[in-house]
Length: 303
Image 1 (tube, rainbow, N blue to C red):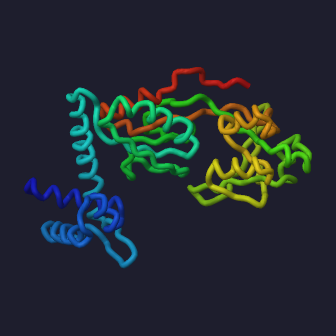
Image 2 (image 1 turned 135 degrees about the horizontal axis):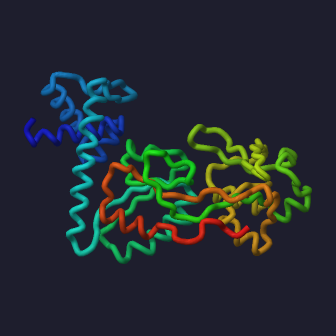
């Protein structure tokens, strides 16, 4: 196949990964009609259909899946090697795409990136907040940030934060009307501010542990959110109890704006890790960010 035809293959990879001509065209910087023409020419040249098209969706055929599985990783390797050439520059350069949950993005990623970028003007960072367990390979992210126990086994994981604890909290105005819960089961008698999980669309069951005994409690209340910030605003306003990362509410607890309960049922657990594919060679720009994020302090917070 002539080298000029590699552009056709790159176009196919973009459509097969996005499963959408409009998104793929925007990513490649071409018109949708031009992209469709390129794909038709590639299929005609190969004499086989690579994409199954309907009015609502696009998906690779069996031949398309085979081509995607074999060829796409090679182009990813070429992209990585081209980016690695930046090590010959005075300073690393290139783009880094990371997916992370809201709390990790705000409390860990952003502070490190804000401090790093002024010294590396040729590095670009894209942070996508996604509470689900995103497949970073298929979505073409350079890395993801999740809690330690959520990192896939075939990934390289680097700790970027201390162990964490959750905190069940309520406003003084709420506890003026309701007694404090003494056990996790007491939460069923309280108005609780729930979290909607994006991965399966369900409601998060509050998790507790004490003396080796683990509990999951399904709580109820008038409010459900999918962000930490809104749950924090709601609990501060006295609308109920919330289960939030300890770090997120430490200032409010210190000022007496929130009261913590069931602390003995909330032990530390593995904190945030940055993870990336073991088979992918990190670029110099990625290594710089990785070292800026690497956690070097004690792993256990004070009880």
